[in-house]
Length: 125
Image (cartoon, rainbow, N blue to C red; front, top):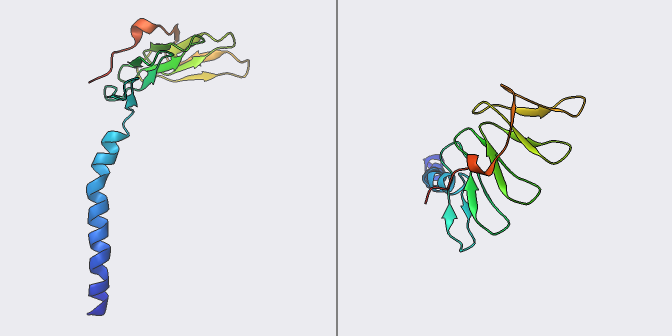
């Protein structure tokens, strides 16, 4: 009987923790505060970044986003990386990968394309 009484607080604590997970997951899904402190959230599978002026831009689902040398977000269909000159290139395939090979060149799933600001999405309000 005493063992059962000890389990009750543990079960109650576990239930409270389980109930708080969805709220924490929603808050941590890549939302970024804009310059006014308002959270701006990416589409599912996307990511957001703030530019030098505090404006928020997001990648499309499965796409990549990085800040260029001018601290402006640029996006592409897949993962993005900066090359040796600081230009951002991305995989041409949604959810595609980008990596640096042994020679320092970037190689991408489906080939690489230049990242552009136009490829970025406006965040979900």
